[in-house]
Image (cartoon, rainbow, N blue to C red; front, side):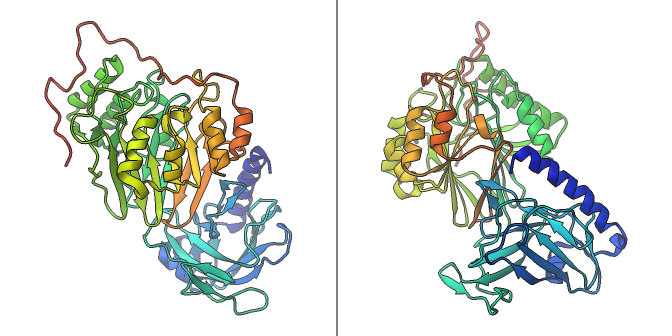
Length: 486
């Protein structure tokens, strides 16, 4: 379905269903997440060899009180992925399910009523040979799981106990080894880079802040739209102005109108640009802790998420800004994510030699905006990603992403997302399953992206930053040496 039509349809769905659900009994309704999950049962399924308009599940409230399903989502084993995009079913605001009542959620299109809601898709969601129905609260916490059919998760099978495929809830359902949901937002900042990571503990990691021409405006607007009022960890992968262009503004914004910035992290290789100097001045002005990181360090994150620093190398690594990019490998349960900054193929080979299988990742943030100076054969093979994310402008003056890299991804059947055509790209995972949602609809086939890219040479320069004010030096804060992390 065309995304614009879908957005209109879902908006209409929310209005209609919200009216149908009403607010009667809302004050007495159960709204505690786990209590809502305990109150609901999957009592009927119709998923075998049917059209989307006939595919449905039925939930029943078995509790003595009504339940408030506002903000809850339904997902399948793959998180509700449809044509490569994450589209879980979201219950309308103020949707109350009375005690003993049922609600049918149909995959296809239709007019919502008091007892039936519609997902709004013209393709099937549920697998007729076995799937998992998950109810997830507004914080991404799974509160109800129902398995049916012949599924094989974590090397254990759960067989449905009825001919109609409606099995009982099963202890064999794939249980994530961790709690909660990790969200990775790749913000569309044009020819630049900015990634927001939100952990299940609601810690925020902001890696880079886009180009200096935007001065952080688009990044700040995106963060505000996500309800972010604090940055716990602010990472500058390297000093290029298309990566730290909004650092000063982001620090200023959250230190003056928000809850502040916890710690800033830097590679320690300076630039002689005004952008870098302004960033350091703002760190100094607001007394933000600044740590230099090197290979072997880890960001101090809470809970089950780890962030391993793989680059720059320990000791004297030289003065090349790109090659000393902070490379971060995140792990959450069985999920791995790699963000290599702008390192080139020579550094990639060193990382392969030093880190080996530790580079393996489900999702790979393509190095240097998809430039041919990065994402070498050896590096991509070591990572072996299922999904790649490229951040660059649609009409990149440097020809990013390069034909060579897209062909490399196509040869390996790597599902590819590019901010130039997909807009903002959000990866969500519970530590086991992975789902991706985009603000714009486009194919994830690298060959289709290659066909869409404007003809341009793949140059490798970073965007030229504004010149440094004569006589100034951007080598540290007040001339002091910033302490190394660890």
